[in-house]
Image (cartoon, rainbow, N blue to C red; front, side, top):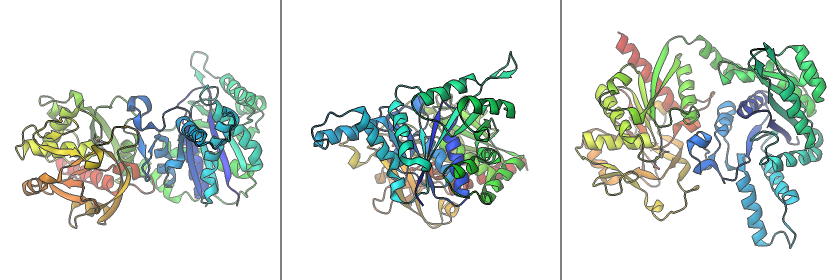
Length: 538
Ligand code: GLN
């Protein structure tokens, strides 16, 4: 079968959820037996989002092959269970870098290098790269930004050209917003009409419109939009606000989004997508009544996208444990010895978040000391694990002023230190320990029990590591190094076996957790939190 290409653009405003619509469509096509991948083209100049502050762009997601990626790739994986790679996320910066490298090599044979055709050709080459592997029946391409942005013009122009080249193997889906004006008690279609017009001006006629809305859009209104926008009435679909993003595939299927796409590319529409496992998850979500209260200690708590993958992993784990997740953000900068008891006493489990730099770090030590002394299920991730080690060094080993050399160059006890390979690196972009690495777990560790195996592979994003010179002293005092990289002996997992559940991972298990394949450590952590809450109530 020839690869089919689906393009998803957005108009009117940003943050409409193009990533969720793309993921939902992929989910349905996969449930119909097709091989699908989703890629995102981001119109900014950064080579990748790895150098962006979470305040700019939310969480930085990491792929198995070590690419620092847009957080939408996290949605893609959580909805499809299909791993993404560097090829699934391309920025304007990557496109220009590649064209400029070719120019320097002399590949353009003396020609003037221009946006059209050289930049657009490079974009098209990247759009088709995954399709050309032969591994996918459908490649869904999400174009970041909104139609009409200066930055996204070369991408939109490339879609226009591809539409011609691909003919019936191409579908254009445009996502817009239908605002509800409360004073007039009316939904308004004009912004959608304008947005589609803008798309038509650059030569693209959408095949399917998805309208993001807070209220139900009547069939008459959909007909009107269809008429004004040159789209078939049944190809105008609403995406109404729902309590959980994981319900969106079902909402899309009810309105035949998958059927519309199949028809458009000339594939048979027979039978129904197999959504059994997905619906099982949604059922658990609907029937969960009791809560599990998890605290997340970090410094980006005012920003809901900064810890996206952790939130989703916790939500999945809570759902599979038949609990509603009650997630409480605890600002690490505001936590101190005098308020920690008040902030933490009702929690069933605590996550110590990843991060960079000194800000907020002392609050993480306060939280960790409290959790350790009160034997609350505690999960440290990346910097959170490093903080577990530092807190233990200071308060159990008596190594006052122990630290990571990230925070204090001159610490007398560098229990967390820079890896040798990192010492000569001066460039910030793409130079951390990134991507999936093998980890061997000790036989009887709680981590190995959680995974049900001693051999795992999880994704990393950090420069600093546990300092093996201190290993003996930690182990003797009760903090065990139970996960190790088999090639380098770097410590990947620590735990205090005598505690209820006290585990830190140098890697980020949240990146590999999906709806249909939730991460075992998160499942085990939430299970421990549930057990602890039941013990407390006895
Ligand atoms: N700042 C720490 C390091 O670079 C941890 C990074 C993280 O939490 N992702 O090692």
